[in-house]
Length: 189
View (spheres, one colour):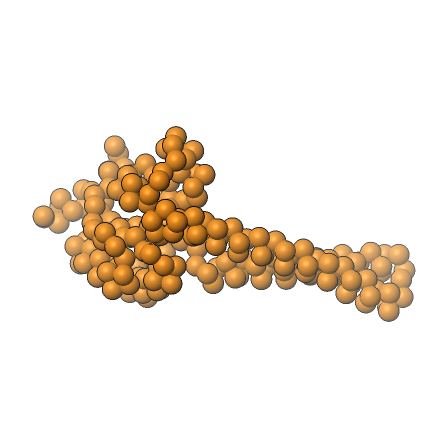
């Protein structure tokens, strides 16, 4: 294949993982090996797939080479943790500052201001913690649903034949099955 031909179409490596741990290890290695986060995509939620394709899927392997399958950006476990922390911290801060501001505006004593800030800050933190757990649970539920249908599907966009080989090697190293390269339809099509 000539470099001109390669540049005219897009390619990607695809593989299916049987465990979340192997999937995460492959993602970590891909990111540390020169692949950009934007090069990595995973299967969108079951609802999004059904809505886009107009039908349920029984097995992940039915979807791996279908260019119409909706995809999602990869969200690392660290990013989920960051979102959880931001929800907890943000709502704690807003609750505490709001309570303190209200007490100051009402001419409250310093002890009352501190108690109100602590109470409403704690309530905000509790709400944030609950929302954070819901975010984390949603992420885990999506992974579990895909594992039940055959595994975690990962696509890795490649720039050139060297990246194809590197992506395939990393996917295989981390026990992905059915690892292969496929062409993507041109964007003009």
